[in-house]
Amino acid sequence: MNEFELFNIMYFGLDCYYGDTTDDRINNLIGEMNPFLWQDISSADPAYYDDFCRFVKGKNIALDNSIDLAKKLHKDNRIC
Image (spheres, rainbow, N blue to C red):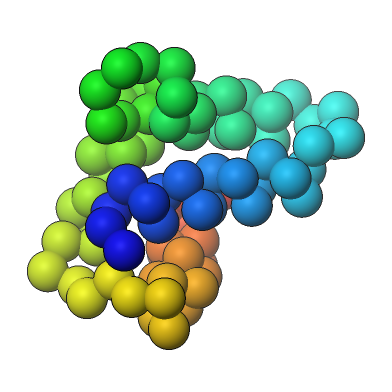
C-alpha cells in the first residue's frame, strides 16, 4: 500500500461515517481532503495531503499497520 492509497482509505472512511452529518466543520474537512478533485495525486486542499505525506514519510505502510497509522495521525490532531 502506498501513501495515496492509505489517504484514500482515510478519506472514504470519514466520508462514509459522516455522510449524513450537518456539521460544517466535518463537511469542510471531507471536501478539503477529497483526493479526486484534481488529476494529480493530492487532495482538494493540497496542504492536507502534503501534511499526511510528511507524517508517513519513512514509515512502512502495510495492511496490518494502516489503521494504526491513521489513528496516530488523528491522535496527533493532523486530521480532524
